[in-house]
Image (cartoon, rainbow, N blue to C red; front, side):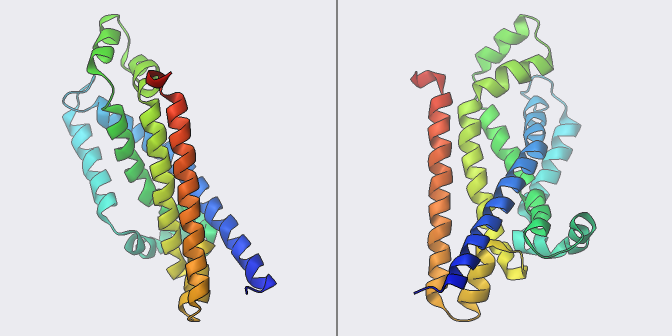
Amino acid sequence: MFSEQMILVTLQGLGESLYMTLLSTLVAYIIGLPLGLILVVTDKNGIHPNAPVNQILGAIINILRSVPFLILLVAIIPFTRLIAGTSIGSTATVVPLVIAAAPFVARVVEGSIKEVDRGVIEASLSMGASTMQVVRKVLVPEAMPSLLTGLALSLTTILSYSAMAGFVAGGGLGAIAINYGYYRKETDIMLLMVVILVIIVQVFQGIGNWIARRADKRIH
């Protein structure tokens, strides 16, 4: 049986994990959504091709995506301290989470936008729509179901990153699994944290898929 203290610790860890995941996802989308749109628009087959911008931005995104999260987490500790005032805890973990997640979000957005029917885009351009109008009134609305599915994927990915931060006192369920489960060899606590994380993933995925279906005009 888990003690009352352990239950309180678990509830606190759950709150920290949700806080890190939701805040990081929000900021990552504020950064990653426009980056993904720029990648699509400046692509050689985009509505405003620009090879230098596309290649440089794509290279930066690929480099950031290639760095394992734990290495990134440790490598940018000085930057994290500069931004958050500390390198430990859930708020500090948001900084590396955003840096790791924004490039991922950019590629997810790029993939979703590229699913939009080219004919719809060309029809808008032929009617005199500007690049920004096509982006706001065609690309984003038409890709919305896929974007929402991608949002659910991003949430689950960022949640897994936040759990890894437990190795360096990042807070949340991951820290509980490491500090109470691994270091103290209390396997039941570690398994409980895994079960809770799995449940959260299923909830995020289920809600995301439901909203995506509701937003898909093709099934109404």
